[in-house]
Image (cartoon, rainbow, N blue to C red; front, side, top):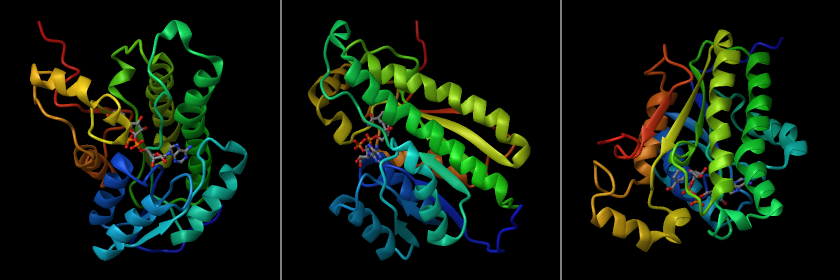
Length: 260
Ligand code: NAD
């Protein structure tokens, strides 16, 4: 068993940090004092913008691009992540995709189903497994956490993107399983369940959601922002809820409340 070098700096990895919620999370963690490894599919302009925002604010950041659904390369990916700052205290499984086209679930193709499950569920599961092994191998006194961004679609069915809902509900059980397995290693595991957040992912259905907000869609009746999700992640990653694990935090303006 290797003992890690002592350092007071905490390090986080955020997948899918090139834009949207992932970028918000990376910035919030940097503000919280984390050195942040930002990941996205490739080192494109969007990921570079995330890097620049954090650097210009005085934060520590490195970009490590990779496709999180590429499981055979996870070991090499986590090697590169670990080398960036010599450690890892927090993994945020944020990267995810929506369906290429919303439509009748009776027409969902096996290709679309497999693609959604590969990116949204298989990727995060095996990445979490790889990171957990490394964390166990390099014990630390620092608070460590694994935080997964699921969706309101874990509990609300959208029949125009069935494969998305199915991929996301698996993340809820994944959180509970890893929470149980990793508790004795000092790694807390959480799920964040966002409602409708204003990003590129929801832009395709913007008018439809706006019409619903106009009629009082959520108790706190406004679009969620990446910063809302990011604040929840930063709070959990800080260790503020250190005696809680396996928990779900809804960031949805109260959308999940069953009202009569
Ligand atoms: P987004 O599409 O704006 O950003 C997702 C980012 O992930 C992109 O930069 C994309 O390039 C990256 N990505 C996609 N596949 C990847 C892969 N295989 N490997 C690495 N990076 C990859 O989406 P967003 O709205 O910011 O959503 C972020 C997460 O939050 C997703 O998991 C999504 O399912 C979830 N979520 C979003 C909403 C919402 O309303 N926007 C609601 C609930 C949950």
